[in-house]
Length: 158
Image (cartoon, rainbow, N blue to C red; front, side):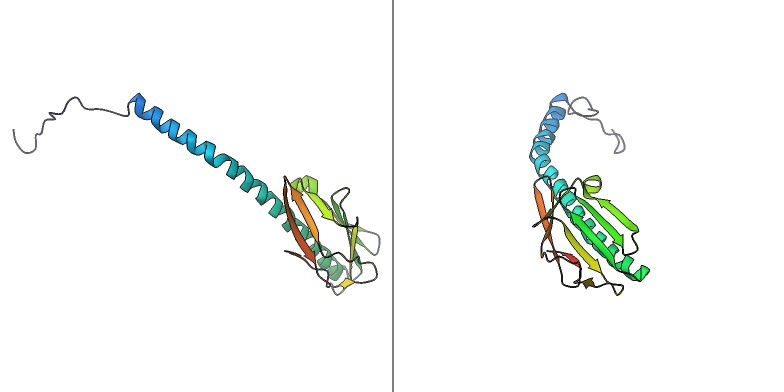
C-alpha cells in the first residue's frame, strides 16, 4: 500500500448523525429555550415600555417645535383616562393627536388627571396654562417608566 492509499480499518464510514445524537441535541436546545423564553418576553415588554416613554418625550418635543414653527402658543394636553396626547395651536388647529394605546399599547400615568403644558412661540413652557407635575409615567405589561417635566416644558426620561 502506498502513502496515497490509506484504508480505514476502524469500521464502516459514517455519514451524518445517529438518532441518539439528534435527540440529545434537541433536548439540550429545548431546555435552553425553556430557560431563555421568559427572560426574552420580559425584555421585549421592557423595550416596549421604553419605546412608549420615548414617544412621550417625542410628542413634548414636537409640541415645542410646533410653537416655534407657527410663532404662536401651542398647548400639549395629556389625558391619562384616554391615553391620548393632543397638540393644539392657539388658532384652534389640531396639530397632532397621539394615542399611546395605538402606538405602544401603553397606559399614561399622571397624578391629578389631565396635564396641560403650553409652549410660547419661543418654545418654553408658559405658566398661563401649564400644570405642575414633575412625573409622567407610561405602563406597558407591568413595566412602568417615568419621565420628568422640567420648568421649561421639556419631558426627559428619569
